[in-house]
Length: 317
Image (cartoon, rainbow, N blue to C red; front, side, top):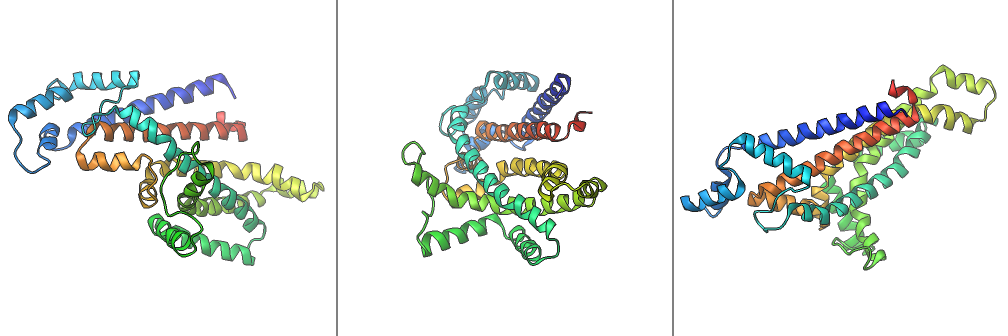
């Protein structure tokens, strides 16, 4: 993996992050109405003009737009995302507290999806048209059709209320009670994994079938190589590039799609402050969380490109 290629990808990621920050900033200032007036009129009464002016000064809204933009970027460089207007709490500290919980949920769901979706897709491709292939294709279609909050509710109904095998929801730190923490993590992780597992199954199956049809696979078999070696070395290595791409994109999508799952299972991730900030017009908190999710999505894409280059060095050219 060449240093020049790595440098180009890193610079492109930084440029994209700057564009995302700029779009978020401009979108915030394109919202109709005065943010200070909206915040103070949440009760329905007309706010005091003096209080509106004071809040505008506190938020820096009385300054020219270019000055506000410069202060916004300078704060991002320093790691200062501002202070919550509702709780008067630093936005960065709130994100630092809750982001690991959201990431843990996403990575647990991704791990479950990979463990079940990828091997099942390979097996279905090898036994194309068989009973397992037909059954798995039908199940994945069903999983893709059912919304995640419906799956979450059914998991709570079956495993928590009916069978009483798992807790219905909540959170306990891993350092306090590891076993209870994993129990509370299991159901929301499965709810997160259901759609990703279905997508990975279909992509793995299609990519494996495509690789099996290539001449180099037939040549490897004609040379007398063991079927397992042909599958691992010649088929899976070439089939994994599109699978890794889909996995990276889906993980990025999960960053913004865990809100319903965290709500259903009362998992204290980023969804709680995001919903509260949206209801209370807490603009610094909303901007901080949106930027955090966007930057993480970019980092995941960068990791996917690095994996592509490791799997197939031709990607660098």
